[in-house]
Image (cartoon, rainbow, N blue to C red; front, side, top):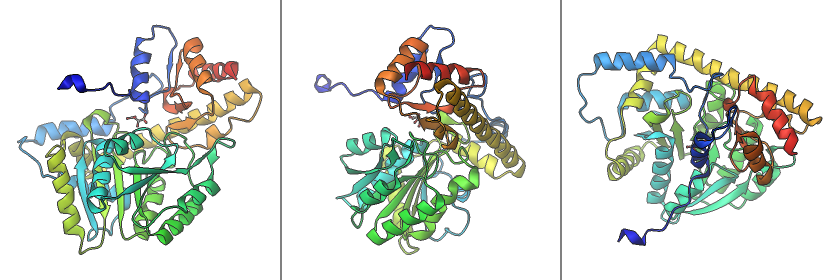
Length: 391
Ligand code: LMR
């Protein structure tokens, strides 16, 4: 039977991890996978996470099953961090293995409700979005998002394409820190997108994987909160991988807002989906997050370290834009300082990306997405010169 299996395409982002590891050159620079690294190249365990793990280890008396949708305390604390208060009577949620698990359960939930579901994705988007949808055999459509000429959002094109959305379609939006481009909507533009999708009777789904990496914890949730307040039904897929730095623990949350009288049925469907997929969600990462968010001192320390992380990335953006201005003798890369989050799409060709890897040991995704956090103050000028040399 298994001889009938076909090879599967490798994930382009994950492929880079292995290629980088095998490269023996000194001074190689990894701007591939979206993992935060400090100036020494380490992905640190955050202080509050360490402290929370110690607390958990001391207090934990059992490893018996948790609840099917995860610990209620986790779901409440994380949905509070995202949405604030006031959704209790409309909010169903399930703890998931990471943001990918949340996306998967969110798509599955929507399809249970609408077997003819169509999902709209930004072009471009995180490559795993279309990959999961294709695997689930869910129909997809794209809306233009990125303007290659300005490296900003092509807002007119976005609205023009979203005009084709039909009632009951699911429209996936990046809540903040758009992956892979780094270009984001202004709040005024969010208002326009919301008005259009309301008129179309679409259901918005927000992917929120980078809260705290763009303009701050609350600022990065502002668009998601606007969406939550504006629609009768909303799906949110959230990840704690980045903002708590607990990538391998797989802590995510899928939230589904509906009317108060539908909430119990929606919750039952989320429970059912967890049971069919993996029964109980992993607990350790979720417990770390809950322990931090339920303790004022740990929360304060976590927020302080997250803010440091965010500002490090912002400083690197400003420095890289300056160095690219010098090295390229032009302002064509000034957008790097205006983008937000871990990523920027530089607008280089695949051939230029390959030359950067082959000639300069600089690794970035084939569409020229860089992870800003892969840099430090010493490698920024090295990268700028390398880029200038392939222009
Ligand atoms: C990325 O886009 O690099 C991250 O979200 C990691 C991943 O799983 O692809």
